[in-house]
Image 1 (cartoon, one colour):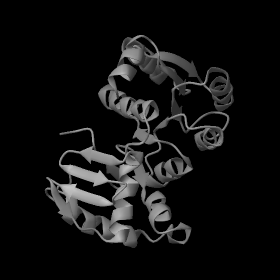
Image 2 (cartoon, one colour; image 1 turned 90 degrees about the horizontal axis):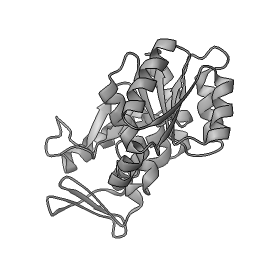
Image 3 (cartoon, rainbow, N blue to C red; image 1 turned 45 degrees about the horizontal axis):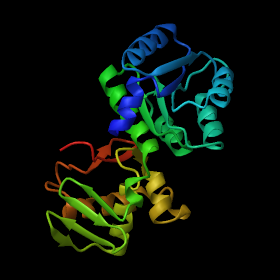
Image 4 (cartoon, rainbow, N blue to C red; image 1 turned 90 degrees about the vertical axis):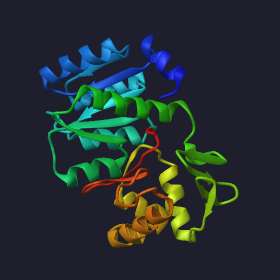
Length: 241
């Protein structure tokens, strides 16, 4: 999160809509998020959540999938048809299929209950940072750690030395860099890099990720940049040293 966004959050500038029907979780979220300066509006049904979204235009949505009236994935679909408000899904549904479906519909991140407050706050900071500035991958030069990607010149350097990538490897890296610190599913990457007809060809992706790691990672066996989210996809990590 940028300094200005952090300051706004401390002043109550970031509005978080919580769509959750478990009273204990709602109380915990409201107490902890309010203590960190966020404005919190809780609702306990999907219908009320959509009404609150249209009325308040929150900065971020925390969404339970198991709502009493409609499936939370329908909320994701409705919000994404209207705008780009960040959505972090909170759910007891641990099945990877549920995570993938929610992310493919446009959710920005996913936490399985129970989760830690510090982890949630970190995910919120990342999501708000993305709304505070253009995607890093859209900048002429993207840098994180010792990795540098010059978008305009299609050049990649690690620790100052040029790295030669195939066109497909470069497009995959650029896809990662356009979504820094966000969870990206296999199918999202496949459709972006290879096209819609490759949505189920995960082996293509795994082969190219392995090749890319060998070229840009300090230790391909313990990746610093392209981190696997088991059963779901990958996260291009930029917010650690």
